Each structure stands twice: as structure tokens, then as C-alpha cells.
Amino acid sequence: MRQIEQRAVQTYHDQFLKEPVLVASAPGRVNLIGEHTDYNGGFVLPCAIDKRIAVAIGHGDMNLYSADFQERCPLHEKREGSWADYPSGIVWAMKERGFDIPSFQGAFAGDVPQGSGLSSSAAIEAATAIVLDALFHLEMEKKELALLCQHAENAFVGVNSGIMDQYAALLCQAGTALLIDCRSLEAKPIPLNLARADLTLLVCDTHVSRELGATGYNARREACERAAHTLGVSELRDAHLNDLDKLLGEERKRARHVITENARVLEAVQALQRQDFGAFGRLMYASHWSLRDDYEVSTPELDAFVEIALQSSALGARLTGAGFGGCAIALVKSEDAGVLVLNVRHYFEARGFTRPVFYSFQPEAGAEVAT
Ligand code: GLA
Image (cartoon, rainbow, N blue to C red; front, side, top):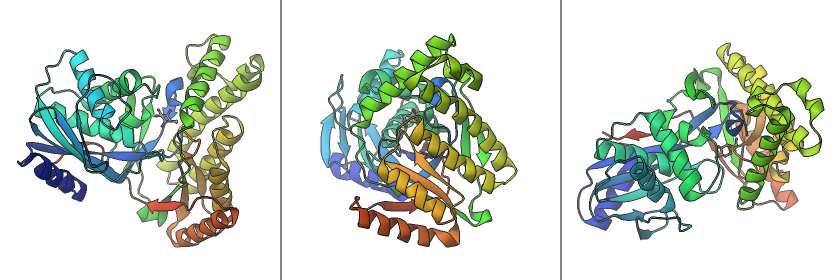
């Protein structure tokens, strides 16, 4: 059992004074490439990180406890703006699907940073979904659980997100990234053995709050829908570069990002398959510049990180997740990671930016019930 799962068990024990029946956990994710393509029917390439949210569960009186928020909450029927919205949304979505969900109680413990763009919300949804599926023998497939989590996020929590984060939290496998075709919903693991190539994936959490991002996210989505409508396609996945002449202004820029980003994901997968990390890294930089200039979701901190990564000879770097703050990643030779961290720290300090936090990780497994 992972440490974080043991913490959930201990928390359950302390709160409910008995042993849980089951414990499960699900990871946060970083997206390697393919940003803002999921809700355009396109391609994404996330991988699971080694930070997770665990839940211990047993039969009880519909109470939930979070060790991270040190708060007990009853399961609720509609959104209240708290962490308990996520598990409550999963129960709501399961009932909506016609499943009988008898009374239970659960204790959560996690180490996925919140509001950093590492998908702590999908992790709590996926952990809840997989543990309830096991406890009540619902026998849903992981793909179905991911769709159910997305439905809970869209319709209960009220965030109009695509499918990437929930798919990653449930379906990623250790040592691989996951190529997701967000239209067909097919997912294919792509081996990513960075340690063997002496490479490190460095995550830089800029600690810039993403609160304001919510409005920006939905506005980006709407611009894409308008562009698709003008072009007469159902989703921008079907648009081509030579269609851009038919668009103007904001819609043209947003569509150009989506079209070029989808192409970059497919190229990036080919680069990984031939172990060409140099080519992969160049695609990461191109993705960042497109997100900065055409999609306009970067921030001065994220741009600074990518620029310093480039100057420090990182193979590639880009913002990851929705943008508007949160995290960036760099693919760097392991021996160069320390220098990059120092360079970024100095620059951020000189600029008066918030002190960033760094992690590195090897790709982990998706949601699992612990044995
Ligand atoms: C957020 C959403 C995802 C995806 C990314 C941007 O993480 O939850 O569905 O749209 O932003 O790629």
C-alpha cells in the first residue's frame, strides 16, 4: 500500500473509529503536449505523476472527511463550492445512471497540490469513482468511470472541462504517457522511459492562482465552437491550416493553435516511439509559443520559465494544463536539472515573482484499488 493510501486508512480509523472496507487512490497528471485540444475532439498526451489522492471507505452514514482540509462534510445533493462537491458529484452521477448507492462514509488524504493545474479535482473524482465501483460491485470499465467523472465535473461541479484529466487519472499506466484520441476515446500507452535516457521531467509550479482562469477557459472554448461553426465542421479537429483564411481575429488565432497543436501531438508520439527526445522537446517549445501567442493562456511566470529552460539547454519546455498560471514542465538532461532550478529561482526572485516549487517524477499508474 502506498504511503498516501496508508494515511487515508489512518484518517478513516481516527475519524470513524473502525477499519475501512476498501482503499483506493488516483494520481494528478501533467500533460506532455496537446493543450486545449481535448474539447475540440483532438489529441492529448498526458502522464500520471507520483502525487495522488487516496480514499478509504466503508459502510456508514454518508459522511466524508478530508485530512487535507481537516473538515467533515456530509455528502450533498448539489454544488456547495467545497472539496466535497467532487465526491458528491460522483455519487450524484452514479445515481443518475440508475445505480443504487447505499450509505457509506469515506476519508480522503492527498498530496496533489491544489489549484496548480495538476488535476487534483480529477484525482479526487477518479479515486471516489473507482472505490465506489468496487465497494458496490458496479462493474464499470475505467473508460466509463472516466466519462462519469467528466459528467460530474461538467454538470455537478459546473466546470466545462474536456475528457483529458479524468481519462489520465483513471487510465494512465506506470512508465508510459497516454495518447488519447478525444473523439473516438481510444487511449494508447506510449512508453516513456526517461531515466534510461538520463532525462528528467521537471515540473515548475509557479504558484500563480488559477482562480481567474475559469472565465478564460470557457471563453476559449466558446471561441473554438464559433470558429468550427464558421468553418462548417462539427469540431476544430476537422479543420485544416488552409481553412484559416475564412476566419478572423480571435477565432483565427484560437483555431490556428488547435490545428497546429493536434499535428504536434501526433509528431511528438512518433518522436517518442523512435526515442528522439530532441525532436520531442522542440515540439514542446512550439506548443508553448502557440499557447502564448495564439491561445493567449500563458503568464509572465510561465513564459519566463520556458525562456530560461531554453537558455539553460533544456530539450523542451511548455506550460501544462489550462494555463492562466499553474505549472510548466521542462524536459532536461538529469545532470542539468539542478542548474535550471537555480536559474529559475534567481530570475523569479529578481523579478519579485512568487517563489516557485519544483518536482520531478517518473510516470505513475492511474487509479487503483489498493490490495
Ligand atoms: C484543463 C481541462 C482539460 C483540458 C486542459 C487544457 O485541465 O480540465 O480538459 O482542456 O485544461 O488542455
